[in-house]
Amino acid sequence: MENGNVEKCSQSLDSISKGSGTEKHLRSSERPIHEKNESHPLPQSETVPLTKWNRPRINVWRTLTAFLAFFIIGAHDGAYGALIPYLEIYYNKNHLLVSLIFIPASVGYIAASFLNSFIHVTFGRRGAAFLGPSLRLIAYIVISQECPFPGLVICFCVSAFGIALSDAAWNAWIGAMQNSNEVLGILHAFYGLGATLSPLFATTMITKGGLKWYTFYYLMVGLSIAELAAGGTAFWTETGKKYRADNLKTTGKTSGHTREALRNRVTWICCFFLLVYSGTEVALGGWVVQFMRVVRHATPFPAGMSATGYWLGLTVGRVALGFVTPRIGEKLAILIYIALAAAAHLIFWLVPNFFASAVAVAFVGFFLGPLFPASVVAATKVLPPHLHVGSIGFSAAFGMTGAAILPFAVGAVAQARGVFVLMPIVLSMLVLDGCIWCTLPSIQKGPDEDQDGQIDNATV
Image (cartoon, rainbow, N blue to C red):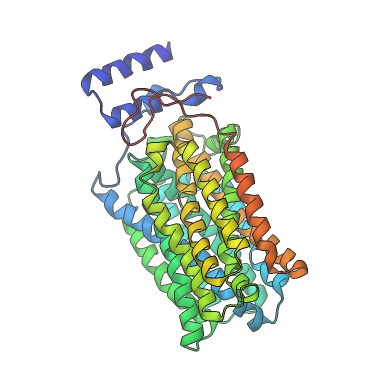
């Protein structure tokens, strides 16, 4: 009976506006993929028009706030590569011990993956807008005060929790918008922009300005204050009560969506895909400077600029390929991008020349760039709307543990075998990620698919 009502609704919408991308995506949301393997259908009352980045007007300010948050997150991750050589000298630690800064961060990511849905249900998006930057601000203030190494490790754990909250919240929110491929591409391009500029600023401050490594975090303190003020203002009306009214399938259950999301296999496919992807992205960006200094024999400043080139390539790829992906289809596009990234990585690995390596690693970043936003968009197309925050938020936060585990693994192996091990590890991770992505349920393209890649039907 429910399915019959949905079909009538779909026909009515079709007669009202032929060729409308919004109504087509709406019909897709009303007939989600999960109806084939869930015991109960999605109530029709949950179906709401998709928001846009500029409608209502306040969404412009909110979207810009999300962009700022991702710029700061990118600056945080991008700084690793430039700062690791100086951390080793300052704290008198080897590769293995310095790599410990990555491991506690995974605790923050995992905690956020389980608490993200609860925070949204209880405090709304306003809670994420306050809590994420507040935690990072506290961590950056402590780091900037020349804290001892154990304190540094704890601070990275705290900042990781704040990063994961913001990452999950804004990925899920923008991923459910109209034109999500393009907007998510720009969102993640701001991550890449932050990761591009942070090693440039950090390297210049240390090598040219003669400053200590921790002075870089004065910049992060200022940016976090700006994000906290902007986010608190923009999302002030996005309370827990409003979130529950807009998104919850049933009332009175604050954790049901996380449990339901964990029973959906798409959630776990995205979890492991993003875990491997995030680990590959951060491991390469974090250790490329050391690789260039030790293996390619580059001096400190050019070696630092190679990290800038990598993150710049990632930024450009997210913007440029974000408009290509919906034309190809997310599933096929991601496989093509992984294959091209692997090809560029082979050049980076096998051509023993610094300039060739610097160009090749920039192309690796270019093709890695769109993988995260494209995977989020694909997930929104095969998941029912009420699971978007629970599933995508959990996947994004849990997947970020890869950004802690794999860089640590590279450092641990590099201590025994040398930093050259970065090359085969990254290549094997790219292959593994491609294999994981192949297990995602197919997104069937029908004749009613619109220009933006929004689908009318999805099948497993």
